[in-house]
Amino acid sequence: MLSRSLKSLINSCLDDKRTFAVYALPYHTPACIVAGENSLSSGGTFFINDFNNTLGNPLTISGCSQHHNEVEPPEPYNCSTVYEDYKRHITDIVNDLKKTGGKTVYSRTLCGDASGIDWAEVTDRYFSAFPDTFRFIYYTPVTGAWLGASPEILLERKSGESRVYTMSLAGTTSNDSTENWDEKNIKEHDFVTRYITDVFNQLGIKAEISPAEDVYFGTVKHLCNRISGEYTGDFFTAINVLSPTPALAGVPLSDALEHIGLHEPHPRRCYGGYTGVIDSEGEHAYVNLRSVHFSPKYFCIYAGGGITSDSNPDDEWTETRNKVQKLHNIILSSVNNGR
Image 1 (tube, rainbow, N blue to C red):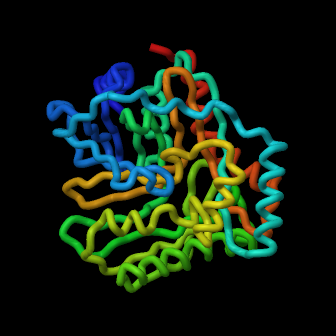
Image 2: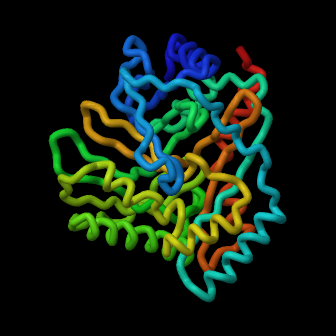
């Protein structure tokens, strides 16, 4: 999917620690690049915020922006989650939720040595594997380098229109499953749908909800409702209210964030935040997931699962393994393809 010149440019920006982003909207080719030099840019304004919007206003990258490396970017977390620790934390969260109700999204990490990895090659293969997602790779001195392919729209508004679109994407099973969605996944999904409609109400948007459908990603599929409504207000105001959604944090939000802070040993950084672009077609924000944080030394893949009172630790472990499998395989198979 990526041209030889674009792959060379990606590696050059990474080597030189130059702020840049390369992205492709769903079903769009070729990919667009945004960098701090006008001569390199073919896309719109790319934006980024981390989990729980701790950056405040989103970082933006455009053809006229300049980001200097006054500080070293954060190194990726480099300790993979151990199953025994994962099971213990999930069990504790489930026991809490049996008393209080609600949902918490618990994430785990899969980390490794990044020596010899050609990240432009990884990007090319990952972009090509998931054409129906928002695909991105970016580097800033604040965030470090991230690569992902997100199936989850946070919010979208087409140019010249007043209608906004989002989705409640939650509940996960094998993509070849022929069974009906079970109660645990339906409950997990309903938490997200209700939260989004409540936020829409706060923003003065009358939510219109489409029938449920299955959305596929690699070896898994998710339960999805598409939600829309009329909104003429500020786009970033809306996405900062929506993010983090219960699909990446939980509900009630304050309880879920407390669980995450107590039980997750790793920093999420940009995982679970959002990224997107404003271009001639409109405003497009996607949740940062199915993603990896990487540097010349390490890489760290993140995956999460919605935990409810009905969750089983073994099932959750399998679910998160399936979510990271494709990206991990692409990374490992590129180790010997070094430049």
